[in-house]
Image (cartoon, rainbow, N blue to C red; front, side, top):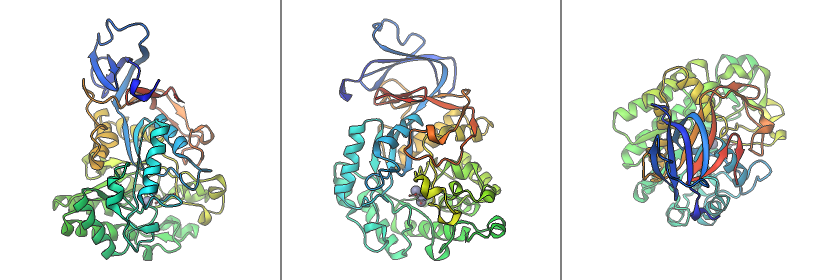
Length: 438
Ligand code: DOR
Ligand code: ZN
Ligand code: ZN
């Protein structure tokens, strides 16, 4: 069967947004065809049926920040294995960061990533284009060509590196405004983070680790808000990690500056007390901060000061993580564990409803990226990109069992209550009960 001939699916007994009594959802030709207690009535017996037992139905998740490592580091992740991880995590669209080898800094590479993503067919893979050639921060890329290519690149970022030169950032913002694309900034003033491996604070001092100050992030967030204001451009802040960044975002939004921001599940859940064991799995950029930062980030997500959750899924080989802390590569897996963490921290606590979770994991990221077929309401006629969540299906994270080619999860051995039990992408089931469906 080809993608265009997607099967007719009947999702039996699901609760859209976790609200109301269970209903059936009929999916035909990639779209939602009927919703209701009798939505499947009269359908032929060979319709693909999934009994979902009252599970929560949400729009499929959209990840603005994923590292898929292809081309160049296919030993740690490929577009195929990363798409499988995405499907298992409830994602129907991911944005693949540009710090591949070679970098996604020209149309040949961005179009190639796009085509491979389509061939794999488990979710939309949108390549992020680099802002500067080789992510060196010196010379702007041909953003227009990448935006006009097959991939229709919508987001540009040097993530992994900061566009640190204010004049280059200013030009990038001006150029992006004309093209109608978005610049996503990895906010890290490199002059303040030389040799830094951990959050600058009492823990790093005690453990003898070189500190990464809050000011390295906050000074760039403040600068870029002002540059975006003056360029009449939009700017997106990757992986906000500090209380001060939250305050700056609030200030900028109050001035009607077009700024948006994401936060990762790991910055919401973990703090720098984890570094006690010097386990390289906890090394990440920006670093895990202090407990009060995690609380400020959670509050900001609830209030909308931070727009959305993005995983910063960053696979690394075992030998790059199981080494001296300062030598470990920064980054953590995220795609398969995002939903359980956000649900545990914000829905199970009563701070958010499932509809709110849909906003931060699907609706807002789709809006920020300008996607028209993702993050849509669960209504008849809408594209069938959906995630099915069982709120009470405890599972324990085991890195080696994740679909990702790498195993660098900081959640090893942790048990979470909620789990994605199914993902529907363009009207086809791409994962079900922890298995990827071809
Ligand atoms: O921890 C991180 N890992 N932060 C980044 O900005 C880059 C990423 C990676 O590529 O591994
Ligand atoms: Zn980054
Ligand atoms: Zn990243």
